[in-house]
Image 1 (cartoon, rainbow, N blue to C red):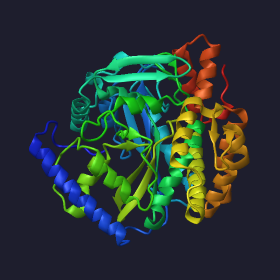
Image 2 (image 1 turned 90 degrees about the vertical axis):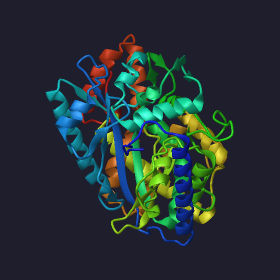
Image 3 (image 1 turned 60 degrees about the vertical axis):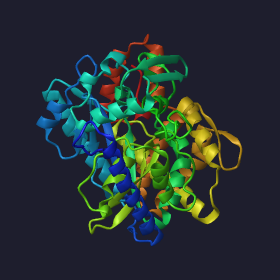
Image 4 (image 1 turned 135 degrees about the horizontal axis):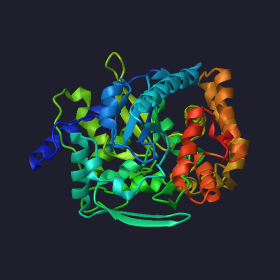
Length: 477
């Protein structure tokens, strides 16, 4: 939901008018998909990475308005909190040396962002949850000054009818209430996009669902919140609970949630997700768009208020033909630029391999099992045991070595990725598995060995991140 809106408050007429246009656009998209009138272009990759602005004490620095105004970078934008920013990429065909090019692009942007932060006596850091964050930082005065965030806060709280309740039971237990959606800003991610030819869009979406468990464990980088050690990837329960509202007819606390793993595979077409959006989720931001029905402006705005961990999106080719993308939202931000690109390579390769299998053989795993795997992997990270395609429980490190990395390799080969890129970036993953050290493991080990000194941990984390070295090589000194 990156677009700004023109209103903060709405009346019943706004909701009704928006809903009618949303209904028309959903019907039109259904027709275009049925007629195979969406883009057939080969896969295109891109990403968004969310980051923190922090001060010299390693604490959140709510200065993104001044930072962005003086940075004036086309790929940088504001996020929900004044201490968060986001960087985008230029989409690139998912073939040949795409990861080298994305790596160079992100490295250049990140270096410029870091240099600019230094001129403002700040730092930028990519991490799933900032360990030095306090609940008192998450207040409305630290919300970015944009209509869409104020409106979102008002509508989510209205839909819930009660404060936001957080209850996460991990290595330790954390339970508290919060009065606004600013709690969501504690979670920062690395969101991977892939534009797909219509014929395989729903198959790749389903493959991304299955791939989510190993990806979320591999990329885990958020073990702490407010000094408590929770899940290996605590972003998952925190984000789900921070915008906890559901569907129609008194089901605001029912099984279909706005932030969720989803309710099922797309069994026949990707339109099923957009139809579920229409049928099960009340409109949150009913801002009428002055555009033709073919622009899908209402459908896209509504879809931006529903946060599946794998989210289908509608965009447009250069000639105006609508296309389908899948946004994979499970990876945490960080720990480093090269780790991020390696994470992307692993996800795209694994999902492509699973997609190929789905096309030829059908789903290799029931949806309910894919969902259970995901939450186990988020909670226990690389210590997880999950049920894989043979129906047996397997330890994740063993599964990476014997099946997941070979699958990622074959998937990247089928996409036409250059061999040097495959070797370079999957070797980063291979070393991470061999050393059993992702961002979450490094943070947990550091804290256990350094008397829970989160400030000093962040100084060392930032130093390691800025070195450019992958997290598998980081020491605890």
